[in-house]
Image (cartoon, rainbow, N blue to C red; front, side, top):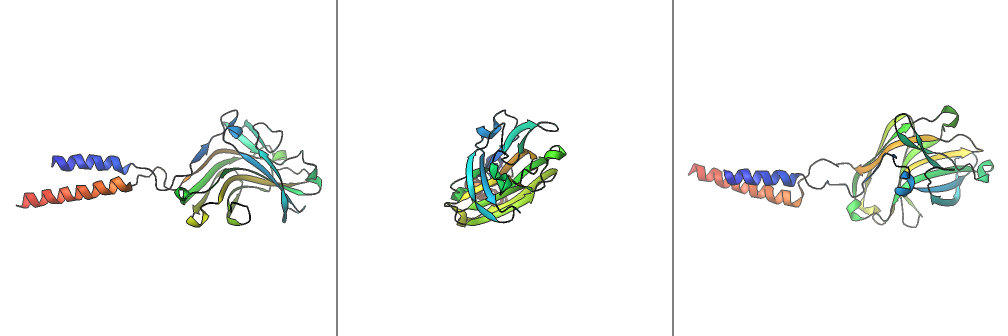
Length: 235
């Protein structure tokens, strides 16, 4: 029985193995004074028709800043530091085009190790009423490597509280671009701000123990030992 106990302990250790789906693992609470540049957030401005319904073209991109003056700024929230995401009001096209401002993380290329189920979650706080946008969202996209096709597009309107977007990265998406973050639409300098905090993009089974290869081998070994002991006791 001592052998069975020892193997059981080994098996218990093996059960706490790497999660099944956790190759992409991103978390931030924006507490650092340079949280945006530290984590490499990117800003991309797309032009739409003035009614914000029809894409025209991608205008430009740049690293999202920590303190503005445009698209992103770390500010004081209700209980902690948050990031304010808003439109680029320095762009003179505000009077002729609707600006779609995207601030996001990009994983490129997606690898086979990234295939699996994920949750993109974040907290939303409302800025002062005069700055709060009504066309603001959290989003997840998967684009082909050359941006020629959209393989996945998920979006949730940003309202106060916690939001979670679930998704699956498939084998067909290997080699493509994963983007997750926030966007807003503004025409003629309309309000577009929203506060975000506690952002995470993690595997759906993060933190849940899984067997893994060594766990399976030890399970077979344990079953063999227990079976042998049971037969020995019978005879």
